[in-house]
Length: 310
Image 1 (cartoon, rainbow, N blue to C red):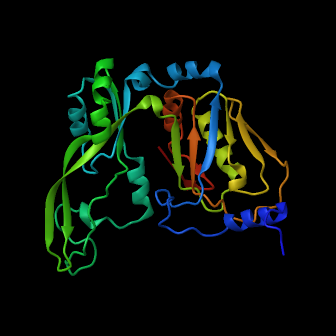
Image 2 (cartoon, rainbow, N blue to C red):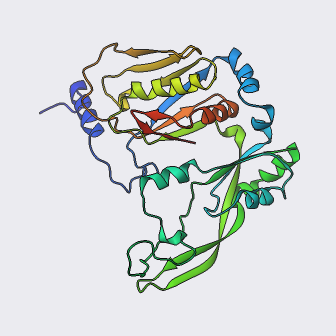
Image 3 (cartoon, rainbow, N blue to C red):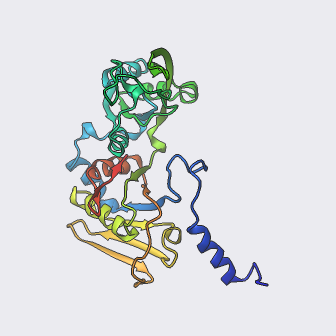
């Protein structure tokens, strides 16, 4: 028989596991991908401070020590409603509603959820009979970035009780029975404030299945460089998870529009498989770096497809 501890047998099992489909109801369901590209991003320290003052005005670059990320907002909430709820903690200096994940989700399907129809009109067809709808999602993809004018406001918003139990918003949940009868009820949705100091990462989703890891990193580097950010290095930290022969991959931008790539081994067999991951996490050194990169990466395209960033 084959020794299960033999290196060749171990490598064969690892390769087989890498190509084995995983069920949708696994612990990875929130991203619906097997693996997520883990990319470390390092900017040139001497150029980042100048970039923050030249490409972004001081009023639009939030101070991390007074900024929160406000998540799980009601899909129908307006910016004024969210601002009003936060101003009980203190006056705001910067506020931004972030709907990129709502837009990305809508782009995946042309069908509008029946639960979001407030007027009771049919969501398709000419019969006028509503289809049964599901309840509102437990966790929404709408969030906000808010900077308080004073440290006291930030301290009030990040109290333990608010971080654990959230700030409650009223929400109307609309559903339809099998017979088409419209039902609505008032529910409460907790929105959770979190200190921005702990937020150093960005999520990218929507890569084509045939994209190579090298192409993904190069397009990200070009977009960051093209938006006036300083020279940076992007390094893929989990190379074998995406392409078994790949040992290391790093892409450098020099700040003048050109990028260079270093990978080991230098040459690989022609690409014969899929990326096996349609998402990537970019990890930065600080919230300010992630904030500037999020602005720069809006409109990113990889292999002709738009990629969402947030």
